[in-house]
Length: 338
Image 1: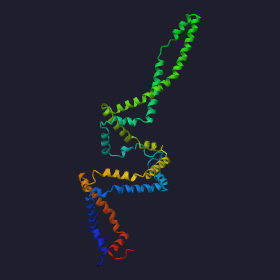
Image 2: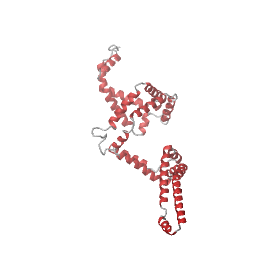
Image 3: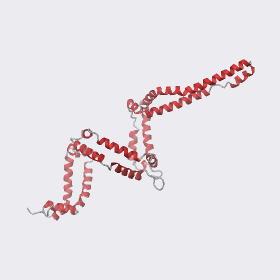
Image 4: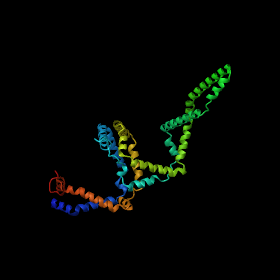
């Protein structure tokens, strides 16, 4: 068989054969079911293999340290001006309203979470401590305020003291001393009594808070609060977020990340769990083709053109490389593959 001319083949590829080959590949890929393109077992196996290789590498911590240092330098560390971001720069300046407005509307929906779920989220020692301190301080201040409102009888006692006999005057002084002692004892017991009451009331307070947060009449108000939270995040200067991020210990972040990688890699059931997770995620579409899914969304033609253009831009320069010419000559038998 007469070998083909590599230059003639290259010319045909440049003249449109490459585009035809790209179309052929796209047609084939888009016509395949999702289950043929993505194997849950293969995805899980490769992911776990990469994870375990990274966990076993002695360069894991140095690599994480380098990546984190790069991110910190680009995003949160101050420059010569002492700031990481210009004044008044916030997330809203970087995100289009076409994106933020629908998200705000979605958050403002009168959604009501389940009361038991909210209660489980609140029932944590940090929340217990917070409520305990607030209730204790409030009740103690209230009790002391009420005690300070008692009538001032000093003038009455002074007036009576001028007319009472000496024995009764001494009895009055003794009574005043006893009142002072009793008052001091009550003051000493106040903190203890309030503390005991607050400890017993924490569960009831948490339950009441959960009830209020999930009450139907508060649905609209809570929706407004969630939308308000988004507006605060969007309108806060990025420098404020950078300042908060600078408070985090990078060494601790590296150690925690490396520890998590190694703990996951050591999990014997990880591959099976990941396989099942991918399988469940794919289940609704595994028998459909990629093309059908994209066509349902109205994206098939647009994405096909985008992929064709991108692949053409990436592959066309390859045709002009020495390596491709050598491979083509070997393929066509015009020279030794070596």
